[in-house]
Image (cartoon, rainbow, N blue to C red; front, side):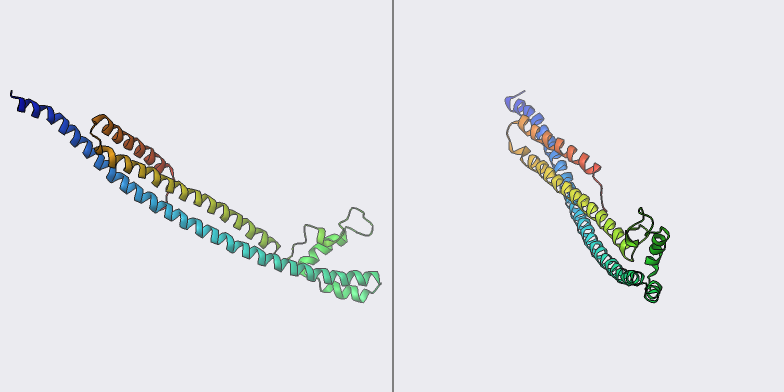
Length: 219
């Protein structure tokens, strides 16, 4: 065997190793590019879900405020009519007391009947007024509380969606590192360093895929 043939035989394993490394690197870079695009897509989708949830939470806050205003208005009317009733009772004016009682709103009449049945003038344990009873529920009070609960739920969902979007954004950074290691893997003359770069890129990609599989997805 001549020196040229011996040199050629020594180069063949080296060339085969370089070709194998380059092939693996291309596959890693191709898969990482796809995974990066998918992570960006998911981050965008979760960001949209976050915005929708925040918007719905704001809408429910407005509904809760409107219903609370309605409840306050109803309570104000009931207070005025009940004040006329107390004035009639205090002045022994049965006509005024009956006039006011006939104009009790249905929701107030329920609480008033319960309060009156407790004999508040004789019973020290009786509620100070019908408004202190749980049976007094002006229109809008329940609706306001329910809207507040829905707003809280949407707000919590928005925060969760924001975190999910951030997770995918961080994942794109991880895949960017894979691209970095893969791009520079073949820039080194030393085979050991080149393979170390490829191995590091592969490990990072496996870690990223593991996270990607564990994250919730929107398609």
